[in-house]
Image 1 (cartoon, helix red, strand yellow):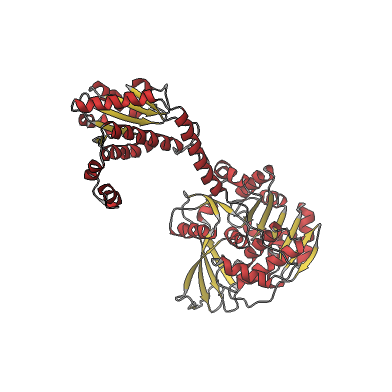
Image 2 (tube, helix red, strand yellow):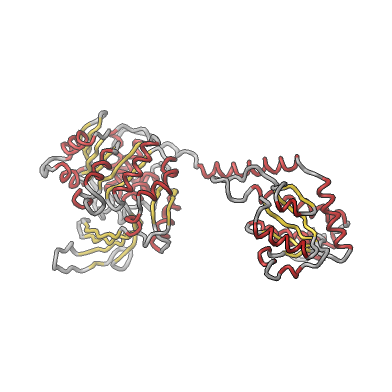
Length: 522
């Protein structure tokens, strides 16, 4: 996940040389693009209908926000920690022929540790069908850990050997870990340069390199990329060279990334190795026709790649259903089921006692206060407003401030409605104890019917739920809906008990659409 800062140069200079920067078509001499070995792969795979996600480390800085925005627009899920020193950036210098020199700062990517992969990202990895990872910027120990998690979960694995071993060792880890990583790849995709160094055969062609590497590391398939010439594949089902389409090179950055994204998409769509390699070549060729490696325009990338593809016809399969939509539907279902169960448990006597308590307090000149801690605090503000607008003057009472003087808001005989799902929140219990000592009467709205709050209350209204909904099932969702419904029902009873009229409602709510309706304009 890298922000690529692209420069056009008259030529790629050597040591002690100088060269002029040339203007870009976008204006100026530098332009930023979304990039990175894996993110580029996923961009091209996503453009071809593969649902994808990425995990790792960034910083909460401008480059990171740019990258996350691009992922969101491309539909690439992300599971990221934002506690890195800085998000990754690269300075890329292009000459007139499209060749380039790249200087990169991995920053947060290089800070991703194996322990963090295991502790923070293992569940995300297990959701996939295939893990693709790289030897380029991520520490080898972290790559190895991700591969172990994937293998244990039954995922297929792909490793992009994007740099020669001499660049990876010792910069990213030791040689033993590098070899362990390569041996865990079902699909190994090295560049020709990296493969030659790994095999120790400077004059071997791409196909011979693929054969040797497959034999050495036991991979199911090895695909060696060979620039504009295409690629060589060594697999059980196919072994041979697959030529790439001829195109005009504008920017060669990320061609291998685009290739692997297309190859993986082809395999996902059910193509054999030869045709999947042809689709990979088509993506690599399309990539070099434009500046930047990440396909920001997914529709163009898909159309152009399919134009350049010369393999067997196929129909892009639709991506699998997005589980986030299923989670949304399930959240509704859970809330409705829990509210239905709450309705079945409705205890009219408890509501009658709560109504009587509030009406008696009002008759004696007392008032109503609503309080809660955390999410119920926000609900308490709403509850006080709802009660006030329907004829029961009520005020929000800040629970944690109660023991610091705000208890003076209440006088003896006032009623306090206290909201807590568990009924065990320490700050709320301290507030309730203070309010009771000052003569307050307590109505508890809680799911903890045997909780300390329920035992302290004069009346308890059931708002219990068995499930919250959501992926973790922890954040207050269904419980908040239940507490809201209990408040709403209580306000309805009070409104009816006092014979609250439409005119009285309009007097309290003359503005907006409801003001017009209550006045009788509609």
